[in-house]
Amino acid sequence: MNRRLSFGLVFLSTYMAITFATSRVGISQVTTMEKESDLIGVLKSDSPPGDKAIACKRLAIYGSAEAAPELAKLLSDDSLASWARIALEAIPGSKVDEALRKASESLQGRLLVGTINSMGVRRDAGAVETMSARLKDKDSDVASAAAVALGRIGNAAATQILRKAIVSAPVNVRSAVAEGCVLCAERSLQEGNATLATAIYDDVRKAEVPMQRIVEATRGAILARKQDGIPLLLENLRSSEKVLFQVALKAARELSGREVDTALAAELALATPDRAALVIQAMADRKETVALPAIVKASGVGPKLVRLSAINALGRVGNATCVLPLLGIAGETDVELSEAAMTALAALPDQSINNDILGRLPKAEGKLLLALIAVVGQRRIEATTELVKALKNSDNSVRAAALKSLGATVPADSLSVLISQVAAPGHAEDLEIAQQALKTAAIRMPDREACAAQIVKTLEASSVSTKSALLDILAAVGGTNALQAMNNAAKSTDPELKDVSSRLLGDWMTIDAAPVLLDLAKNGPADKFQVRAMKGYIRIARQFAMNQPERVAMCKNAFEASRQPAEQKMVLEILKRYPDIEMLKIAIKAVQVSELKEDAKQAALAIAEKVTGKSEEVQKLLAEAGLVEIKK
Image (cartoon, rainbow, N blue to C red; front, side):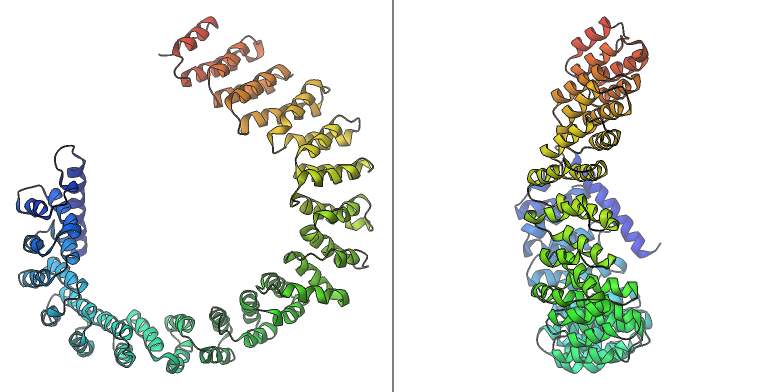
């Protein structure tokens, strides 16, 4: 059987044993023990494996070197070795190191591998000689574990052994030796010995080892050299190996210094478009030293893929110097480039750009004006005066852009600008856009009642078609004023207004529409508008959050006001959805209606099954209604 699979099965069986042991009430209190001697006593006893495993875990917290001998005895136990190592790896002191070393002399296979791993975790310098011998073990798993352990120890002796072995080790162990070398190099770098780290990384890069190890060493070799690593960085940016190109990009993001940015900028002219696009993104991630002029240049000329990458990068790291180039791109005929430039202009992080854009608006014409207006809206810049001027432009697209930007930016005290564009548009073709702009502006107003009041004032003197548009906007605003205007329109004699208002009320998003809908359902004529009102009222009772007495009251009102059995059946569904004794009473009463009898019976029985705590009252109500009793 595969060793890793075998180990996994043993680990799983032990875990299940622990779970079972700890789930038995009164069997073991080992999980509450904190005294080391008691825990050691568990290890010495004939306690179940589950208890011993838990004792090991607690010794990792409370144990000392005194526990090492008993823990070491478990290193040869298939089911408990891993648990013993948990404690041994955590307990400080040379006695633990000695115990692990001694145990390793008599172990084999996966148990030996585990013990070697623990010696590496502890970075036991005294184990270097042992690991050096194991590096030549016939078992490749053992030799590989020894190599990685030497890397974790990482002292001068371990480093020397691994550097020699990277050339001479068997092929199936060499990857682990390379991993150990990389660990030694990382430690040397942390300790300030960049020269040694560089030499070790180069050993690995030149060795016949798997590509993953070469990748790790290449990154380290670049970073260890600092500025002197730039030639190696560029070499790998040009590598035919995709993984080496990717690791060079990673290193480019990590290596500090403006010289790196200069080198990356120069590389753009040599790289293929797909790689140049990725190099630009790496440049943009170096925000503090980014070579911005190079990215601006790349955004304006060259392959489209590169330009799009550069434009995107400018949105992240650009400043005021990027506004004019991006505006120029925004005016290009290529839609993808134009939209990317607009997105970048909207995202530019420098807030001083807003003043730059406002300063350009008065004198702008044509495509530049169109782009500036759009950017005003995207950046939420308040420019009402200039946008209102643009509404008189003869170009339809300029007026449309101005309306959209007004929708995104107009302040509350200038909302009348958009209201007037809906009530009396200067150009008929602007009406639909003006309506959408007003809706956009209205729903972001801080005082919705004041906003609705302004719209209602215009509503009263408008044509029917304008009223319909304004009602749609009022529905989006919501609130008391909007609801009252909707109610008035629903009671008007005009069929179009009744149609629009009843439809909007049926979809109203707050519970305060319920009384209005009920009034229309009860007092309106028996037509489609009355049906809409009732369905809207029932929708609120079914979907909206409210306390149970309120919902009960709405269901009673709906039953009384409904003129169609179909509507009453909808109410029965609500009763079943929110069952209580009062809902049961409504359902039982509905049994008396011939068209509802069977549906009401089923609803009553379904509710009765769910009502708890009032069994006697439920049985009495069912009995009085002549319904089959439910089980108590």
